[in-house]
Image 1 (cartoon, rainbow, N blue to C red):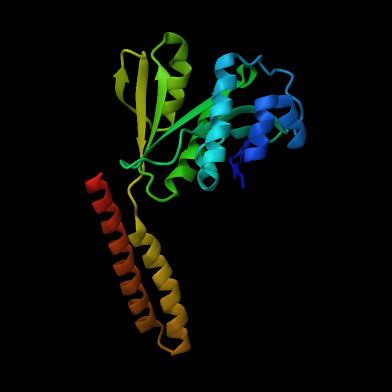
Image 2 (image 1 turned 180 degrees about the horizontal axis):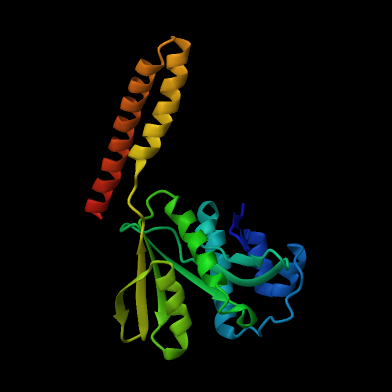
Length: 229
C-alpha cells in the first residue's frame, strides 16, 4: 500500500525492507527503484539505533507493523526519497498514538513535511480507536520549523517535559458527521427503490429517514467514545 498527496508518495516499508534500511539507505532505494539521493546525510548512531528498534518492533508485531515501520517520503517528480515518517506504535488505551518525521536538509522549508504529516494523520484517523495523534519536539530554537509544521497541520501544544526539554503537541480526530453522508446515501437508495415501485417520493422519504437514523446513531456512538476518553 502507499499514500499519495499532490507531490508525494508515502510508502510503508515491509519488515524485509526495514532490514535493508538498517544496512544502508542506498540498498533500500535500489530495491524500491528510486533515484539515488545525492544529498543523503551521514547517519549517526542515534538514527542507526532508531532504525534497528523499528525493525525489531516490526518483527515482534507483524500484524501491526504499519504502526512501527518507517514510511519513506518520496518526491513524485524526482522519484527520490527525501525523508521519512512513522508512528511509535498503535493507539494505547487512551486512543493516543505518537508520530515522528524528518525531511532531508536539501528539501526542507518547501512544505513537504506538512504535506506528508497531513496524509499520515488522515490515514491514522481512518483506523479503529485512534482519536489523538501526539508529536514531541525538542524545546530548542533550532526546532522552530518543526513547530511551524505541527501548527500548520492543526496540532496544539498540550504540555512540556522540562527534564527532557521536549514540547508535546496533539491533534484530535475531527468530530464525525455521518448524518449528512448517510442521508445522501439513503436518498440515492430511496430514489432507486421508489423508481422500481413507481413512487419516487415515498422511496426518497423512506431512504432519507433510514439514512438519517443510521448516521445519527454513528455520530452518537462517536460522541460517547470521546466522552469516555
